[in-house]
Amino acid sequence: MRLLLDTHALIWWLAGDDALSNRAREAIADEANSVAVSAASAMEVATKFRIGKLPDAALLAQDFETIIADQGFVELPIAIRHAVRAGEMNITHKDPFDRLLIAQAQAEDMTLVSNEALFDGFAVKRLW
Image (cartoon, one colour):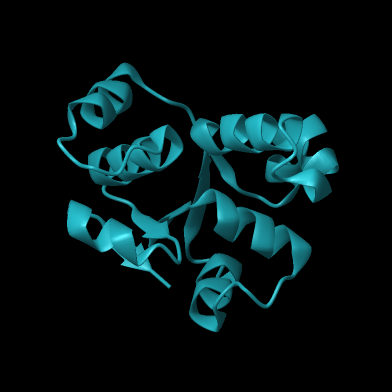
């Protein structure tokens, strides 16, 4: 299975937080699965750390790329087609990071690992 981690799922995985569901934890840990992290999540972590919404994410914000690589996760860059798809979405959900994750999961036929039930309305496969 090809997984794309939502930013919160990534943070909870790294922290060993019980907020991450057992099903998600098992899927991420399963070496048969490919686990990707979006460049959108890097931007979200850096932004929210800078403005004080993720005060405990200093290490991740400062060394995102290395931490992702050390986990064996694949970097998913934001392609123009991802950005266009996200921008064209006629949805009321305005969070640009979530829009990009939804667009990437759709375009790359990936399963989005997220607790956001709201994503279910956007024709995206979601695992939680």
